[in-house]
Length: 252
Image (cartoon, rainbow, N blue to C red; front, top):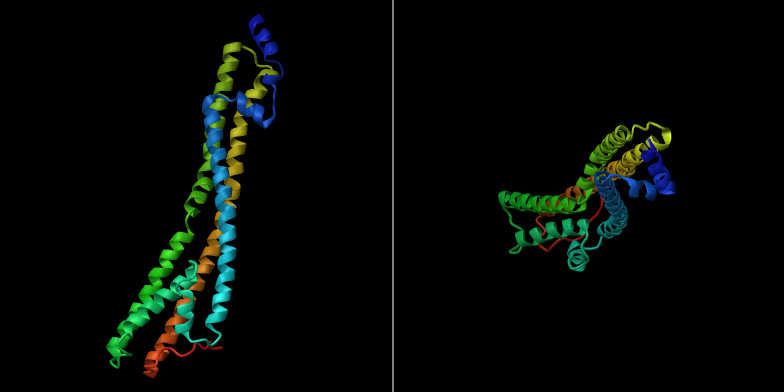
């Protein structure tokens, strides 16, 4: 019994350092690896969260500015000439895709046949739909990672906890010492892994739900704009106005 007592005394304050850094240093190598993975996942999750939050705010502001210009009555040809070389933005890309297809379709004048007009409508709608899908895929980058962290981090932390507790019980069996001073540090180290798993998972789950709602709302906004823009082009085709698109007027 002398050796375990001497070992416990010699460990001194290091063996009972219950700070987060101390728990990490004293943990089993496998538990340390688990903790490192969870810390890295948490840091990357917060990077995505902050970037996505800033991005969505900017997108809403830019969309408001563009829609104000779109419904101001300015000729759409002039709007397109102004924004086609602007900095990338999903709504501008959607508008530009529709305008490009429209200009190609009426390059030789507005066709008089209904079948040709229907073909132009379909191509414009398809071009805008493809643009929306492409833009939303880009905006959703990082969402899969947040979902993965939210669903797996607690289990990764639990694995570290189970592994650490197994090591603690093995040490108890080897030393034949079941005092709280011997048992508590090992269990605390193991439970620290679960705590890190929750720290990584909870913000990721909340952010995923919030951003999913925001992205769905923005996608609906793009779809609504595409429908309104297509309606304007359809009215122009119906009127057989070969002088170009005049003005956009929002219907109350």
